[in-house]
Length: 68
Image 1 (cartoon, rainbow, N blue to C red):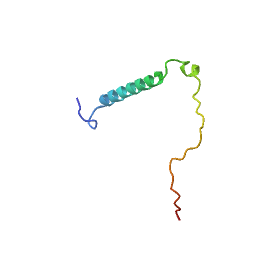
Image 2: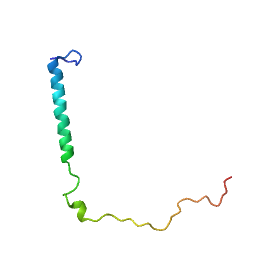
Image 3: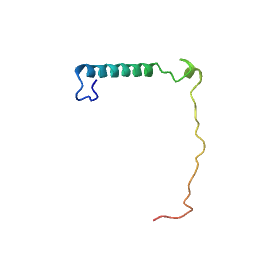
Image 4: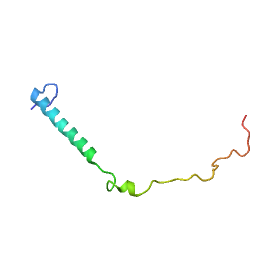
């Protein structure tokens, strides 16, 4: 068994490539099949959130000082 990739044989490299390919395919499949909502119609049944604008607010004030 080779402990270094520099001196590893072709079969060791092939095993590493095969394992990484299988792992990446598994991650892609899990990512595609992941669902964040409860079902396919969960977002359709509840309407979109509507945010209405209120009156303008003043959070800061310079106290009447003039900056020149």
